[in-house]
Image (cartoon, rainbow over all chains, first blue to last red; front, side, top):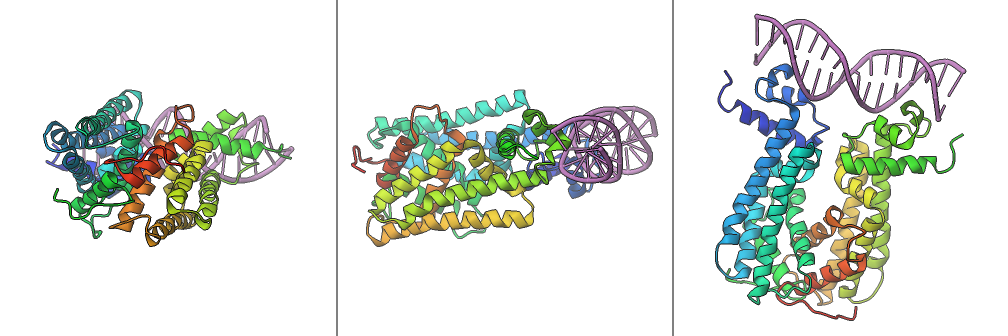
Length: 197
Length: 197
DNA sequence: CCTACCGATCGGTAGG
DNA sequence: CCTACCGATCGGTAGG
């Protein structure tokens, strides 16, 4: 009978390897060596290599959704919600750097059916951001000449974080979110400082 | 003797496949079938599969560098240069969607020595953007409380375009660049409209 | 979770 | 550019 947490350990190791070498660039034997379980024995814990990719990717999607949902549903001024959303997004990335990277980078390697599941969750996440921006516009906080461009710019900037954020860097997730919010709200022409958000 | 353009044709096909399935997810036989050349015969044109990845990636890097260089070197107000830089960046992506995607997505699959070459060109590109922003700050056009965060936000947004830009979409590269510039300069609080840039 | 293994496929080559 | 092929490795399984 499998020791408790063994499967979690395999998922963590797979996340790390998929992040570094990609899904197709990682072999079952790589995972075997890194986990100290012979490759054939891995199949006592998993059904297939793709199962690992799906589970990592799907958990990642859920983390993003679950952390953004209360922000979008909650109240407060749009500026505050924007910052909270960015904090939530960055927190998911910084707390799950491997899984988040695999989520962004490798989900297209899933086969049809499972890729569609992830695609659905990505769409849901994107539409939550769209709602947040639309609300800001309705309330007069944001003036967006083109909401779609604004959404794409913000999401690209937020999604790109997994490529450069280092937990050991000088800025905390909250500080990065604060600076991004400042630039996004006021632009390069004149950032506001010392906002009490 | 190889027909003229045969090698180019192979590179184009490889770009398309690497974009869709990733480098490790694409086999020599995939390229063989798509190009109508038997897999063994491909090696009359290339030395290795990795050669293809490197050539695609390196050409992509050069396209980005060569299109940004005249903008950074040239004169004009920082706002105009920012927009020109975004136009140049988007143009490279839209005119070379496959190669640009491979450049962003697959360069880490290169082996040590060649990955370092690409890394160097990426650093060079990033530092050109840094110079552009620093110049804007020196001239009083931009007020950046944190230049590094600003650079990362802008580059992430610009780099993310390969993931969503569709040539057949409603916005031309210039129009996307204009909207991005507007948001980046003035922020969501108040975009300027009808600027004569 | 191990031993022992399988058929399929991989990138690449020899000889024309 | 084709024919014919190679050794290595792949994801996965049978039987304990």
